[in-house]
Image 1 (cartoon, rainbow, N blue to C red):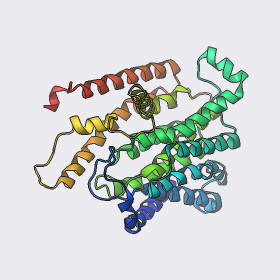
Image 2 (spheres, one colour):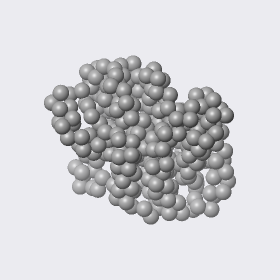
Image 3 (cartoon, rainbow, N blue to C red):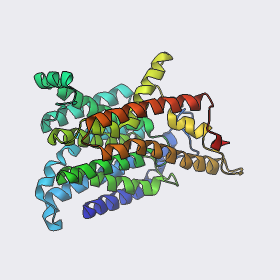
Length: 364
């Protein structure tokens, strides 16, 4: 696994270094008046392209040259979903380059790719450990496949929502992936663990350039890569291993999912389209109201970069509130459900406290 991680890291960091150097001519196309923009200067948003290249090359290596690295050849079967998810990721990269692909088109492409993955791999959500629902899922398998398609096609957009500051979504993806790797290895599922280890390596290679200096952003392509691969890993892990509670991935992903659902609700209440960008997500409120100005400097770009970097650790801590109990109690559904409910209450309470300026005393 260490070899696979290092391979993913080396390929990703190298590809992204090349992209940083050669993508400078594209950055002038990015709008400077977008509400979710919290940085100065022009920064390429092609980190997803570098990570995708890393994962696909690793897939080819594991498929063709794996025997020379003492890697079982059957790992190649697990990397098939990466190829099937590639059109959705490429659609996100195209949006990063042109800023002209609508939200509806991107959502349709991700759902279509998710459908192909679920049909090809025969994936479906067959249980929720709730007897009155599990009987229906067993009686109507198409419902379970529809839920799997919704999960794999929807999570990329959840990661896109939380991808707002240097190191934020990337570290969230690493923490969640490591929890999945831990459980997969306990169950002896080295194939699925390999895919997620490569994702961790590729993300680490991206973070070298993204945090704390912000030389490149993940963009929509990076968010779709993280969301698609992690969602596939979650669905496949529960489908393959009845020991794993279906609420294990639910708790793992509780932060990005809560952010997405609350954002949709908030915009619907205000009469806005859920696809409309705004600056009222939790991480944006933390940036404005919790993170102190750290420099007495006339260099606005440097000051904004420092505040940007100091925002992400708050959300890493939020993610650990779900990742740690999920990793500890991955077999026990009732505990996982309880933790999900507690986190949702905590999330809403924290959001309302920040937006109403009810800040903790240590902030002053």
